[in-house]
Image (cartoon, rainbow, N blue to C red; front, side, top):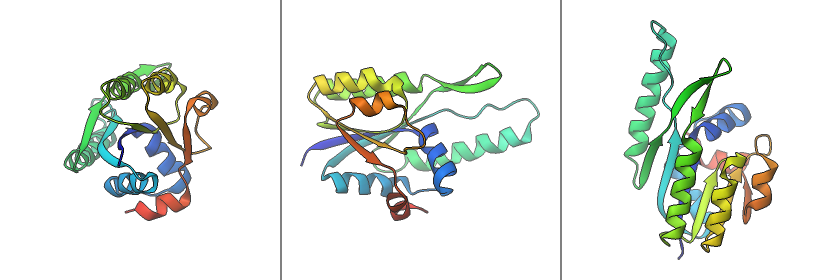
Amino acid sequence: MEKAAIFIDGGYLNKILKNCFDVNVNYAKLCEIICNELELKRLRTYYYHCMPIIRKGNKNDEIKHSKMQKFLSKLKRLPRFEIKLGRLQLVGGQFKQKMIDILMSLDIVNMCFDKQINHAILIAGDSDFVPAVKKAKEYGAVVHLYYHPSSVHNEILDEIDELHIISEELISKCKK
């Protein structure tokens, strides 16, 4: 059985789960279902996100931060899960994720270059991953994308080897 790694853009998946399905999922189950459907052995899952900003004296921010810490603590204790954190930066009056795309891209490219995996499975929708996808394919990996049609950039759709929609059926199999 060929080996795969799953690369999850946490901000992207959270947005999809909240806006399209209004549920929380069991991440271990989600990864198990994906790899079973593709008949692949999961080497590891990488989850990329940013901790929420805590503005001075803002109790809501403190609650969000605490919830995220608890969530990430549970996630990192799952077998073969690794957490990678970027940071939030204020851009044009809104907080934007920084470093997530580059961290994820480096991991994809390095694992494919080192032949640790034969398949890279992305849960993302950002066109910033296109160069990493192209490089992974050059190194011989098959690149899969799990995405929701409501939130994906066309440029990444054009570069992926195998497309998979995050469907109601998939989510219902792994919701908490």
